Length: 173
Ligand SMILES: [Zn+2]
Image (cartoon, rainbow, N blue to C red):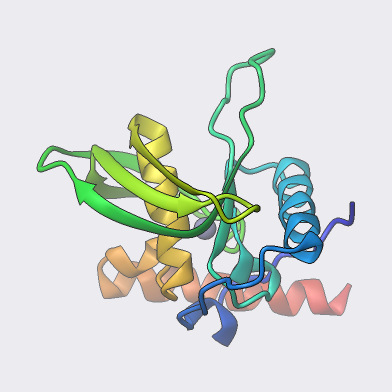
């Protein structure tokens, strides 16, 4: 397994819609493993392929946060929300591509999602609470949407300026 470097906003690759995955081969399985390892290492609870510069519809997540909890790694290929609840809740979201920045985002409390596993088998499941927020946040990445896109323009611009400064500082090191 290989740790991948995570793109930091602003980056044009984080603003693009990704292509569906069509080849369910060993390369895809390896990519999913690398993404999980990169996510756990960060650490984070979700990661989308475009965040490592791979422009395909693939996300990984594991929202088990309790210390000593059994890990529940999930790999979702070509995921799509097929139903969402009218109930909405608010979570303070962050993103591995926008380190150190957090903001409250309102989303449907529950969603039903279909996807394919790394072998191409079709799956369907309902997600709620943190898992629902996470899966929606990650699917957004596949459409070039970031959580800061839900914020007021002023706040979004402030975060973007902070990230530009952060990237300049990182480049200097
Ligand atoms: Zn994110």
